[in-house]
Length: 223
Image 1 (tube, rainbow, N blue to C red):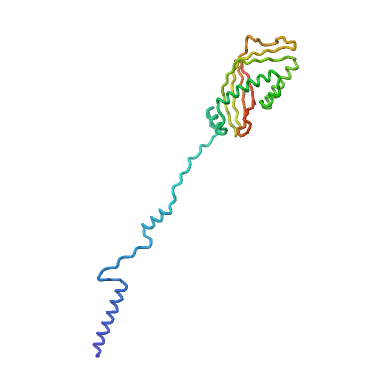
Image 2 (image 1 turned 120 degrees about the vertical axis):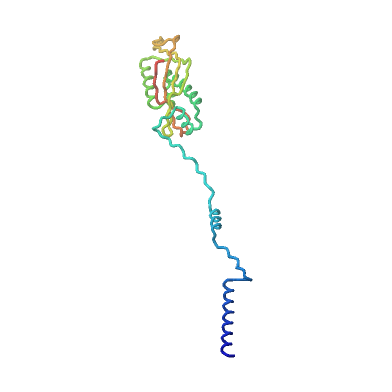
């Protein structure tokens, strides 16, 4: 084989080799471009993954109102606060109990019954009542009180921590008769009862298991 023939054969083999390499790399088949392979992490895939990892929305409770002691609060507002601390509290029930306590305390004071007064009164009020009973005994006089009627209403209320103080006005008609040791009337008239206005303040720790209110302050007005 002469040199020209060898050269033609060499270039033919080289061309065949190059065509084979191009077909392997580009993947041409029957003149068609091979389908593109999907990207491993497209924008759609990213959104889907973010959606899968997203937590459901959490509903937060509304912020609680902050009690500001410097702001004026109505009587009704204070009574509502008392009821929040002590759900058993009811204004009507409290007034009924206060009227009953009023009758008991007035009767015990007239009788000089310290044992009955002690659990119903705060220390300062008890000492005031105790001195009055002692003065009456020293003067050898007795007091007879008959409550003919009594009405009550809440004037003010205050809540400090868990201690509530409620001030009540008692408007009563009373027959108060003071007698000497001999039994004669020193003061008072059975036929002309006194119209009385007493301002009493009751207190109670609402967290206490003791449901009773204590009389901690008294004032007397002329009707």
